[in-house]
Structures are given as C-alpha cells and as structure tokens.
Length: 212
Image 1 (cartoon, rainbow, N blue to C red):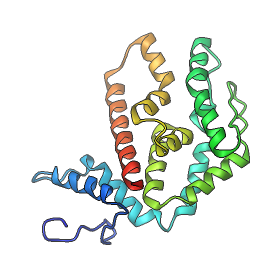
Image 2: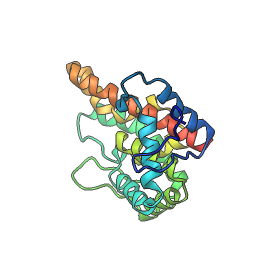
Image 3: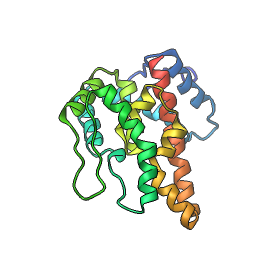
C-alpha cells in the first residue's frame, strides 16, 4: 500500500512481487522518499515495474537478447597490446570462462584481433534455455546487470551468487582501470562509473531478493 492506496505500476496494474524480500526492498525505497518523489533514487522499483508490466509476456525476446550479449561477451574480447594488459585480462577473466564452460557445457572462445571469437551454439542455446526457465523478476535483473557489465557470463555469476557486484564491476573495467593507472582519472568519468556501480548493486540486490 502507498498511503491508503494499492501500489500500481505505470501500466496501472496492481504491483505484485514474487517474494517478501523484494517487496521489502520496494517498500524501503518508497519510505525513503520525501515530499518530492525522486524516481531516479528508486532503481529497485523501476526494475520491479519493468518485470511486472513487460517481462512476463516477453520472456522469449528477453532470452534472445541475453544470448546476443553472450555472443559479444566482454570476457571474450582481449587487447592485442600492451601485453601486460592482455595478460591481466587473461588472468582475471579466464577463470570465469572456465566457470561458464562448466555451467553451460561449452567453452566461449577469445580473440585479440578483429576476427570474432568462437562462441559455440551449444553454450548460447544453454544460456537461452536457462533464461527461459527463470521467473520474470530475476530475468529482468539479469538482463540489466549483463547490460551494465557488457558480460552475460558475469551476469550469470552474479545471479548464482558466485561473485559480488563490486568484483563483477571491477572485472568489467580492467582496461579502463589500467588506463587510469597510466594517465590518471577524469572526474566526469569517475562520476559516471560510480553511477554504473550503484545501478549494478541495485540489480544484484534485486536478483537476490527475487530468488529468496
């Protein structure tokens, strides 16, 4: 309830959530509002509205979108040079490709050239099937997290609680952080990165609560 009215989505449907934990997160965002409602401070509520109004009827399309993320996964594209950055990417990313191979039954290839990496169809199909089996709220958060990270593999690792939001974010920014160490940090870029991390943390909380 919002005051004495049932809380509704932008499509004017009664907002129904799959778990008490997720409902409590939405309630906490509303309780934190003051006289002026700030939707930009309510990322959990936004994801809940999207899941409620759109995901249920669009699961197949959303699963296909997830597969498109996987086909161009950040972890599969490595720099050709400098070699120390390439080696850092291999050290930090290969263990997650190992994990994805075990989970989805096929190894995602990597490339350091303009030639696309080898992405086995079996792995993509298994990811798609995993997405189709998910309930709409968790799938919404998975899609959002994968888009923020540029990586379906890291998105699934978050979903399975194999990794936290901060670690996943750091893994997605290996090249950016390497550049910062070389040349320093731009304040505007830092502000943008902080905003992306906050969005990822919200998606991760949403995932966890939606599955409780």
